[in-house]
Length: 551
Image (spheres, helix red, strand yellow):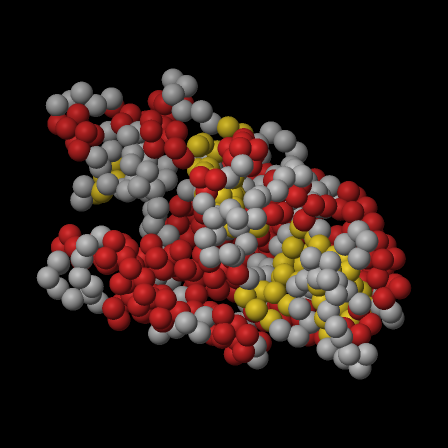
């Protein structure tokens, strides 16, 4: 595609054939600028001279919080602690365990089972997110498309078309998602029958990308359709803004301007009152339309608070790191990894294996002849990946590296986690999965892109189902509370709840699970959710009693 065709294709993402804007395609959030008219924004973005002289607003930074559930036994084993066999209440936790949980800020609580299930604990995973102003976001989106088509050419040239799975749209992966990608990897393992599989995780991926490598790859990518000895001025301007980016903390900004964290566009009564009595500081005067904020503050107010040092603007002065959350971040990370992908793919091909990368998740499959090769094959691959990561200034988290062996059960001779052995027929050809531990092979399951695979069965991660059930409970409780407040005598619209939380809906978790089951031909996934309609009915009854309302 030439530049003119790219412009047309990019505009079509946000506007229809008549030029009318698709409102739902552009998010409406509060930032330092007003959400611009799309057509007028295009006139600016398509002018190279405008980009060369454009002043980018600071990104707004916050930490997205997600809860993860883990086995408590894994945590206690690391600290040589144990739990009483009869424990069934959090109050009876040993003092040493309580102290351990309270001392770790990432652990939110212990989850003690009263039904004999394994005890667990909840941790907070904090992910730093930066989002750009409205116009800046459109600029990044357009330049991402400018780079994308040349990047695809480079991938094909380097034979990486089937290797890189994330942040792609215009290749053979169109219409494919993590379901298809994980199924492809699982089928490869089945075809090999005997293989070692290593899964690696790159820590703080977007925060450690070296700027000099990004710049070199940026130039290499645009040179697929043009010839430059250095980045053109407008490209360099965008490169500098995304690498040496400035940012402000969202909570600090909202506190300074009196903005609600839950409803940022709503103008608080205090602000309205102070504005009426003219006691409101000038910089806090809301920019509004129909009593709704349209931006955080005016340009003059922004300059005032910066000049008076009321607002701290931080800058990324390191020679590494890009903001996670910009429209360019995913593509830039893929560009950064091109040479890494080439070298690791060449290694796996030399050993007749496969390599796949989904963002910062690396999966390598190496075929072997027998059990005796498990240790050497996994050790050589592990050493190669760690050395390669060091070369490209990446931090592969060794604690998260997982090593598995797949082969027929009769040849595997693995043990269960409790040390017992499974009686296996010598003629058993069922492929089994075992984790490569220090002294033995332990029966386990490979976890990849949200699915688990034991050599035969594919299932969805239990943590994904737990998240769905928590969301279901919160949603039902919310709808029942609304009913109690606004329509206590009316009937609960259960059909609406089932559209949100059962397979009746089109875009919810059960629908995704059933689609996964169909694509992967895995009845085991259906079994994981076979009672979800009953769970919804049970939760409606339970929560109704708790808040004292008739469903």
